[in-house]
Each structure stands twice: as C-alpha cells, then as structure tokens.
Image (cartoon, rainbow, N blue to C red; front, side, top):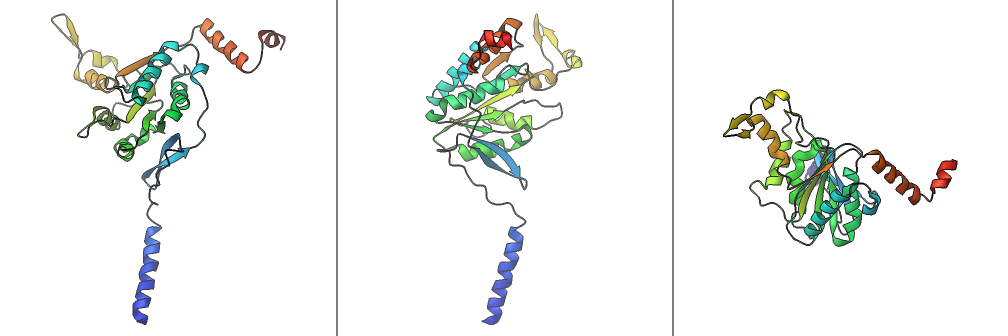
Length: 255
C-alpha cells in the first residue's frame, strides 16, 4: 500500500510538471457582459481578451463621411435584423475615420446584440477557430481587421478568403467581417502585371496575377471609399469638435 501511495504521489508530481509546459485552457468571455474582445496569442494558442471599456465615439461625432456612414449603418442594421448583409471593406486615406466608424457602430448597437472581435493580421490564420467558437451564439459579431494589407508572398490572405467564401462550411449567419485598408485590393500591384492584360473583342481581360489580387477584395460585398478631406471639410470637422469641447469661435480667436 505504501509503494502504491508513493507511485501515485510521483505520478501526480510528474503531471504537475508536465501541465506547466502546456497553455491554460481557453476561457470564453461572457458575451452578455462583454461588448468586444481582442484575439490574442499566448503559448502559441489563441484566446479572447475582453475589452470592457471600448472607445466611446459616436456616429454623430464622425463628420465629413455622411455617405459612408449611411451605407455601413444600413448594412449593420440589416445584419442585426437577420436580413442579408455584406462583409465590408473600408479603404482609402489614413485619418479619414475608417476605424472610428466601426468603433462607433459597436457603441450604437451593443444593446441590440452587436459584438466585436478584433483580429490582427498575423492572427488571420485563426479565423476558422474564432468563427467556430461564436458560430452558435445568439449575438451578432463583427470581426474587425484594422489596417489590412498583404505582401505578394503572404499566404495568410487565404484564411480570410476562405471565411469570406464559406469554404466547406456554410458562411455563418451571425458573423460579418469589417476590414480597413489603405489599399483597394489589399495586395501590392505592380506595373509589370498590367502587361499581362489582353484585349478580347474590345474588352480588357486582366492577367492571372491581377485577377488573383482583385479576387480577395471582391469577396467583400460592400466597398466604402475614403478620400482626403478638402480644406473646408477639415475646418468644419475642427469647428464641430470645438463646439463639443465647449469653445466658441470668439474664444478660439482670442487664444
């Protein structure tokens, strides 16, 4: 009996040492209380990091992008109502409100069941696992990929492409992808690739290299373009925020 007890103690000690070399089990967030999460990698294993206090920007605070705001807001409301909705690519100049627009949508519709999962580009290979985790949840999820772009030899875009297409599994009804990028086609385009284009009966047919690059962005059903603000648009935004901060034009001029 003493030998058996000794063996059990040694086995328990060995198991404890082995467990220290393995990552802890992935803890799932309480989506009823958590509005957003960030997908993070630890010990080569992904998990949800809750974001309890997301950026509190409002849709009304975003000025100079009314058309883009109306289109993505309508798409998001359709999504929340269980109606057909599109994955969205917001592309264009830096500092024009692309990321802020997605954050504002979360604040606007959290109470209606909208949730957000932020995924970095290097973790896109985990998209199938992320989607599988939230597939049966009653909430509606936006997977947010900020500042998205790929290099020519980057295979990670295939993980994104498979989710947009649905792969073997049917596309999840409670998940959309909203991505921002400075590139319209997400991949670099080179002048030499345009030389592959051919004219067939007056129509231009792109070469295989260009078609491959265009095919990814075309998986997004809705494209929203953002351009640099003109001077009068920029000043209107400045004056809006001055009013929000309680400053008047007279006070601003005096200072």
